[in-house]
Length: 143
Image (cartoon, rainbow, N blue to C red; front, side, top):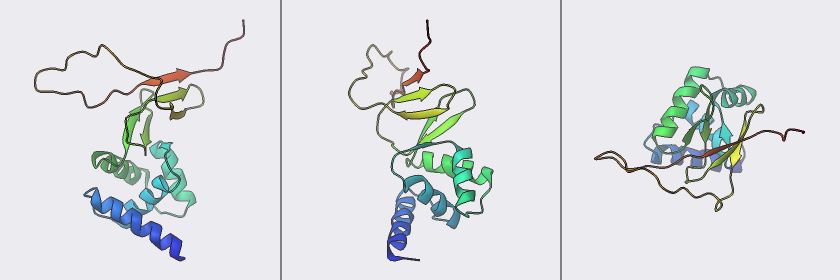
């Protein structure tokens, strides 16, 4: 193992610990796959495929569990795009998304152009945590 790889594993281990999670071998391996490539949007199935391709022996159920634990710990944002299709976003800042229908591809909208106004008052004792906007795209139809 080279020095760069060890430094990345230490950083991932620290990130998982600081989020309040025990850094198990599988969590560290999945976190490394998730965060090593910068901001991205992945489904559990996509992360599972990446893990298997990288030689990480992990079940799909374990991937789901880890992703939900990472989300609860604040490391990920969950995006429900299609009825049963859920993506996990490594960028936890407030931002919005484009979704390309038919391709199941999601990506960030550049900050700035989207504003939300006239939000309803939340019920007593509640506050708005965030607002997720997903703009659905498809190829232009020919007339």
